[in-house]
Length: 108
Length: 155
Image (cartoon, rainbow over all chains, first blue to last red; front, side, top):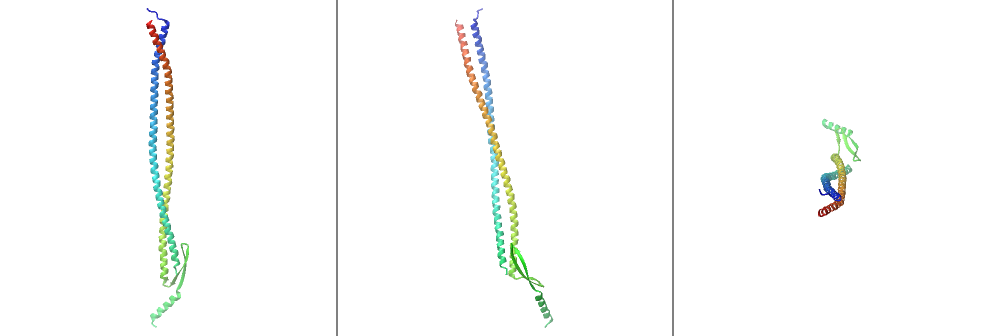
């Protein structure tokens, strides 16, 4: 049996260790990269959900606001119309009063 | 002188004797005026002009009363419209508040996601740096090992 030089054995062992460590490291790194990719996908999904939720909710609120503002405008228009009618009626009342005063003056 | 004539004359004299001018003091729209009527045993009489004035006053007052009723009705409608306007404004304010809350919440979420991305990027950088340093050492080790094998094999 051929005698192995201790230095060669040591180098061989070191080489074997380095190779095994490199292989193990590679699989660890792969797992870590997988984990990072998974986390990134989760973050992408969450960002999408936040953006979609914001857009949807914002659209619903805008619709609600548009409808409320339109209703307010209608109410304001109606109120202005009512005010005009009331002013017209007040004018008629004043006219009636003036007419009656004039009528009284004509009494013999 | 016949009997019937005497009776008529007597009646006429009695009427003249009991007749009187009555004055009523009235007030319309705060305007005082005196209304003179002629009253005798057969009733109250007035001249046509006074009657027309009274009729005109009654008609005008009746129209004014109806106008006041309509005015009251419109005032009620206006109160109701104003109340609805206030309620709608309150609803708008609440919706605007909701929108502000929505933006705030979305901003918080986006901030958290951003922090997540930043953390991820830091992790990836650390991994790459570690991998690079260790990969270099491993490559060196493997190179030395291969060189040693070649040396041993060629001896």
